[in-house]
Amino acid sequence: MCIFSISKFEYLAKNNPQELITLIKDGLLEAADLTFAIEIAGRIKGYDIEVMEVFRLVMTHDSAYVREGVVYGLAQIGNCQAKELLRQLNENDKSPEVRQAAIDALEVI
Image (cartoon, rainbow, N blue to C red):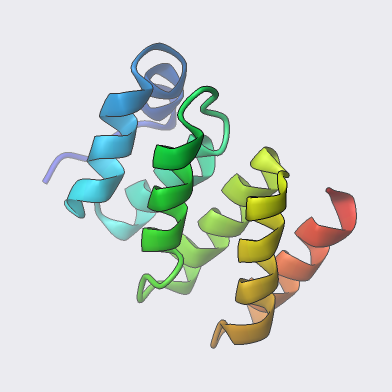
């Protein structure tokens, strides 16, 4: 499995958002890569439905680090849907770190 760089994810978010979305949805990224990819996906503009679908999919990932990446990505979006998913993470996530990150994100958006 290929290890991606953060700069590759940033490039995709800006120049080929659909490819980044597909990479995340395919479920082939290792947890560390997925964490960065999902956080950077929060910067994608113009693909609101697809991006929110990806966040809903990944917010139940086994890795707390990946779910924390979801929090940071949602914080960058900051819309009503993102706030609702952050509330859900705050209320339901099994990791205290993820719940705290969701609280912190909600306070700043």
